[in-house]
Image 1: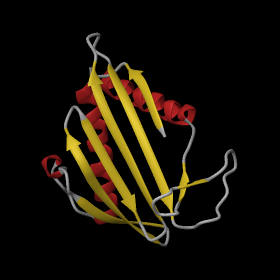
Image 2 (image 1 turned 135 degrees about the horizontal axis):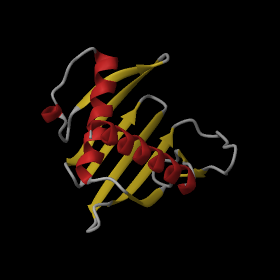
Image 3 (image 1 turned 120 degrees about the vertical axis):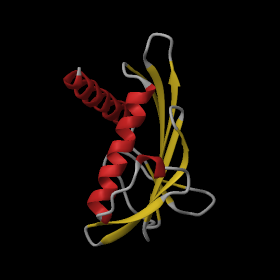
Image 4 (image 1 turned 180 degrees about the vertical axis):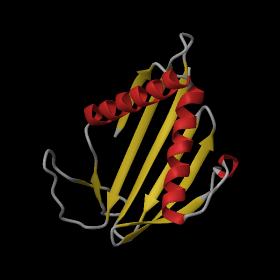
Length: 151
């Protein structure tokens, strides 16, 4: 699923927030303190969610332009890609693309029908663009509130 929105934040604010969230997740799940500079393409770590173990990997990272992350375990693979374009008015155009594959064939969705990925016969699940747009607007509010408190 792909969603594009205009957010009233800077590229630096957006990427700092993404990095902060990743560093916090890393610290909570591995007890390791990692420097921001270590967050590069190819960086990965393992985290526990309930009884499942996930491998989190940075697939692509160009600060102020692109961030793509993958979470994978034995039953699913999730990829999220953020492509950011800085606009003249101090805003950003953010395109978020999410793919979720699961190996449990036969699952059903509450508000939609599942479809199968032709290459691997895996079930492809996704949320509507409206849900993603709402999540991104919430992220924008969070970032603006954080930077307003610092001013």
